[in-house]
Image 1 (cartoon, rainbow, N blue to C red):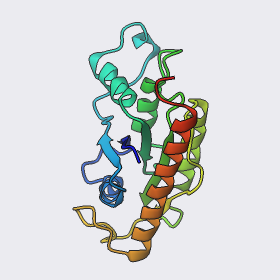
Image 2: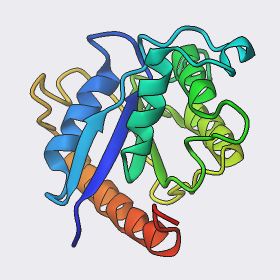
Image 3: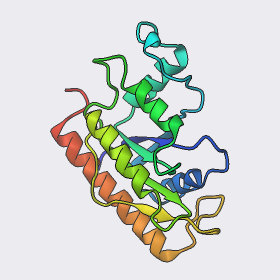
Image 4: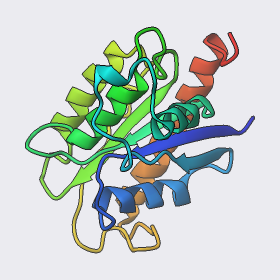
Length: 190
């Protein structure tokens, strides 16, 4: 199987984010054909249509990082039953200016963790709606709402619960298959 370059976004700006830990775990558990590269969002200014005629260098680099990937993975927390503002801001940058949407035809997956019993279910639902509007083919099954408990993932990204580890491996295998199917139908260079 050919290698897949997956750009991932962490929807939290915190250096101690539990979603950053989840991303580390996913990278550790991923099949060897999946190469992950973080696409940082913390340095993006607040989006304004005033930038559309002349994107700042940080936004140009951000859009290029997305273009350089075969697929995208959103690892998001849930803030106040919604997606974090920093993640929505990043999506707004990537989808602009009109006609230059970086998400169009780019396969994507969504996952997240929180201490709550329903994980990040509401945020993921809202994020899926935004990505659908942005014409990003979404992996809709398997959904992954991870309830985070202290010690679930070590600082090195090792998952300590065998059931969670098995589930995450299956999630990544499904994501890999989904990306392959989408890129077969919608090749990157078409």
